Amino acid sequence: MAITRRGAFKASLLGGVGAAVATTIPASVAWADAAPAAPAARNAREALRLLKEGNRRWSRYVSRHPNEGRARRAQLVEGQAPFATILGCADSRVPPELVFDQGLGDLFTVRSAGQVLDGSVLGSLTYAVEHLHTPLIVVMGHQSCGAVDAAVEAHRTGELPHGHIGGLVAEILEVVESTPDDGEDFLDDCVRANAEHIARLLREDSELGDFVSDGRVEVVAARYDLEDSKVAWL
Image 1 (cartoon, rainbow, N blue to C red):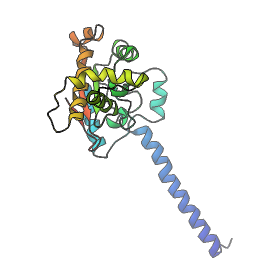
Image 2 (cartoon, rainbow, N blue to C red; image 1 turned 90 degrees about the horizontal axis):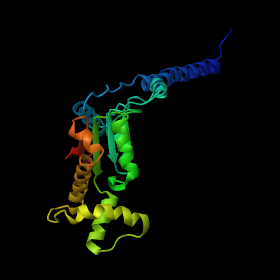
Image 3 (cartoon, rainbow, N blue to C red; image 1 turned 180 degrees about the horizontal axis):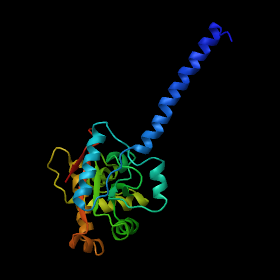
Image 4 (cartoon, rainbow, N blue to C red; image 1 turned 60 degrees about the horizontal axis):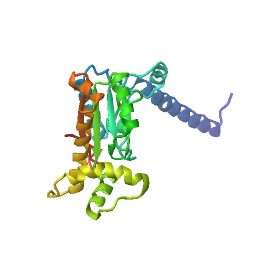
């Protein structure tokens, strides 16, 4: 059968599109399923190492986005076994799975503005430790935290915001008032002090403290930098 020039062009075009689809879409799906999975951490040291490695990838723009594919999703239907618990701020700029380049089921995340503790937060953290056996809790503050900034403003003006926000700010105000205002960046000093304060409260908690004292769990404080995407361990 004779092939016209128009027909040849059309066949060539469709062939090129087909080749592109064949090489890009399946490759993308295969990449998602075959992305390297982080090994389960047996202790806090290993968990911390995985987090540091993941943040290093994230800060260098070479994230792997592991454990997002079909196989992982099917596996998680049966249950979860995260290797670390992250208590982070609710700020939309600090999602733990991205910051630490981890995937589905890798991290048990609890988030509240300014990492403020209340009954539901403590209950969630205790669940992670007692039932999911995560060996590490990270309390992660971050640069330019709005909740801490509101507490700094309340400290300077003597006025708390109204309603629920005022109650949240009041929880941070104690830390702000005990932080020396003699550095270059008082807000950032308070962010760091707040993360360390909350980590200390968790170590001394009536329930979580038992896990810490017998070595089953470690609690560490950290601070995320919005400018360079790096986590500093405090």
